[in-house]
Image (cartoon, rainbow, N blue to C red; front, side, top):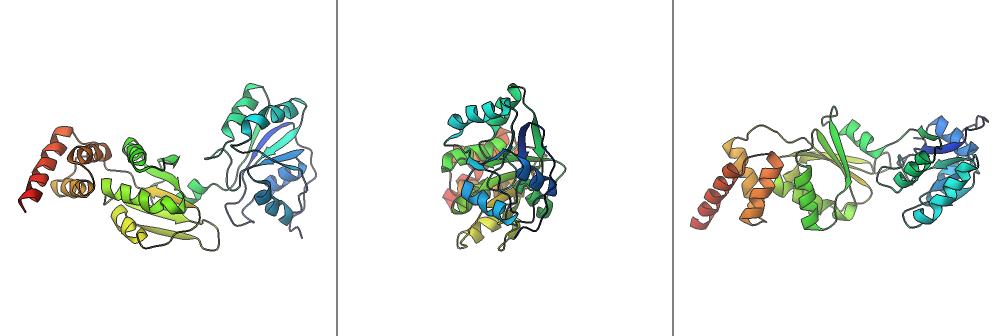
Length: 288
């Protein structure tokens, strides 16, 4: 049975980008429900997933699939309907559309064709995670999912090391341990937070240094959707002990050259300083 009453107001023609709950079904706005009920059609990542939400609120609007595998074929059809004056809603399986899903080309095409594009804001996993992580929120960067392969992922982390403020990432449960191991190898003392299954029954937020979390994840089974937040790196020169710690961690699983590059990128330090210290540490290790 529906626990909401629709406001029967017609919608202006256009494309409505509608946020839906991350997990808890009541985390949806009244306006979102009004738009979904009044739209001519709802385009969804997965019609079965969205069907559960629609059934809860008694919304019978036709649902059609729009996802990465059919987007190129469906986009002209959606644009044609918009040209005919339809009011169409776009939703993702959870959260705000266009955040790591295939809606961007459709929005660009709709705007280029002169159609109205309306925001119907609501739940967003990166913002929800930031609100509870206890890390800086005045500046942050969102990078979505990093590459799944180790070398490409490490390169991406190096490129993102200079991003201002808190770095927010998405990661699947089965790759979370590998991601944190890479972060720990580069910056073991970097403050990190993992927000898992936000708003759902098994919601969990864990924090610590990258090194601590990487160690915990080795033997900790993880399920569900994860948001990883990494504190901003210091831009000032590191003291000698902190530099040594970073290099020792990087050298443990990388060549001297790669370890130097990782620490340089992570902390914005000059190559001469980092390379000289890495050579000294490598020499000490060989003499032991």
